[in-house]
Amino acid sequence: SQQGEEDPQALSIQEGENATMNCSYKTSINNLQWYRQNSGRGLVHLILIRSNEREKHSGRLRVTLDTSKKSSSLLITASRAADTASYFCATVFGDTGRRALTFGSGTRLQVQP
Amino acid sequence: DGGITQSPKYLFRKEGQNVTLSCEQNLNHDAMYWYRQDPGQGLRLIYYSQIVNDFQKGDIAEGYSVSREKKESFPLTVTSAQKNPTAFYLCASSTQGPGFLNYGYTFGSGTRLTVV
Image (tube, rainbow over all chains, first blue to last red; front, side):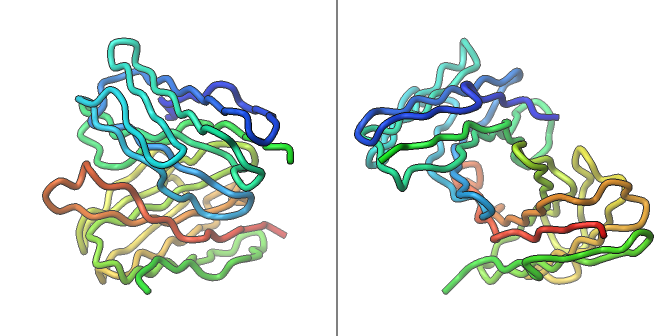
């Protein structure tokens, strides 16, 4: 099952604009991770936020986590054409005992030069 | 360089055939995973293994089989029982040591399987 769901499914912006993607999940988590996938390629790990953290930064990326609302957001600032990719959230659920990531359906980001 | 290698990049399967996808890592990771991705979709977990000679079913294990005889290798066999195997298959690995929840996965570049 895919318990993480991204919103929007697709996003098109101009270079230099900020891009915000949201992820919602249904059960308690240990951590939440964001990955990037270029078309036809494997996924690349971007950033991990633990359940006791509220915000984390990495370069132009900013991730927030609201465990009360079971949601996370990924903000890419000053986007570039090279940021065009699909972005997925993924979680390890704390109450299932399964030690494997469950991925959301992804947001396809298109950055127009 | 450390990494995870999937082969082949493209694979064609005839109806009724079993095919095996290779996944090798030299990252010294204990855990390895297989995911399936259909066009425009997220990843679905097929099987995962936390340690040699042990593995667990994921959400869509039917029609697939795996083995974990070596730490470095986690091959996936798509059997004839898998009725709709055309998809992009991704292998990943991760550490399982102390603080494993603080680390992400390393993915291979994928194998695209097509039934002909």
